[in-house]
Image (cartoon, helix red, strand yellow):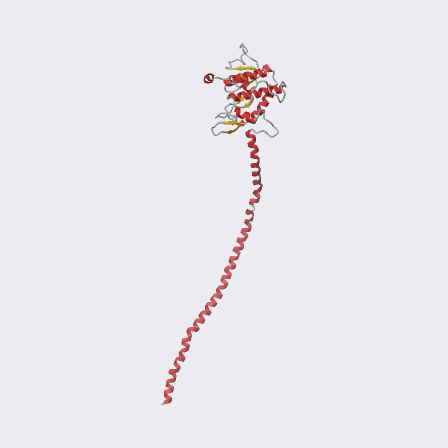
Length: 312
């Protein structure tokens, strides 16, 4: 009985042992799943390497593209000469501005000090300009007045003096219709021996042979081509050379030689005619190259009363 009980009890005791593999089976499955994941990851690793290898050429192509773009980076080096030229132009601008302002070179001097010419107002024009006078205009003031180039006016006085000095004294006529030009022209003719035409210019005075007061000059100077239009018209008709004092609003029709200046100001007209007279005397040799005539600028300036100014 005792042995039978032992045998019956043995399967009961060993039953848990038989079930052990069942309990351990998940462990094996876990190891198998881990091995499978490892194998899968190993299989997937080449794909990443392949992707890296595939991406590598793209990077190489990118580097090649950047190498192709390198000449574009060098473009500023090609543009350097242009920048140097622009710097040279900027350096040259002050010299051009100095010339436009009428500042003479160091070795050259004006006929009068620049301050004297500017204080006389020979550079002051009008609020109008013509295409003919544009080369002689330096700038425009904020108030709208055009400013003439003093250096060019100085040069033209020298040229006109050489030109007029070649003619006989009595064969040079000077016309002045404007009131402020009467006294300067009268004094100019006294100093140089020229023939004055002061006041209203009578038609036919140059072109009508039957006119009793007709004059026959070889050259004529006018103080204003607009005011002395009749003199310009007849002189050009007869073929007489014309030297004219022109402001910014004058035209060159019929004029042979222009002196750019303020032809309306009292002091400006006195200075211009005095300078012209002095240069003519120097060209003729009547006075020394550094000498002045006995008459002063004040002698050339018009003495106009207020009543006369209102009449004009």
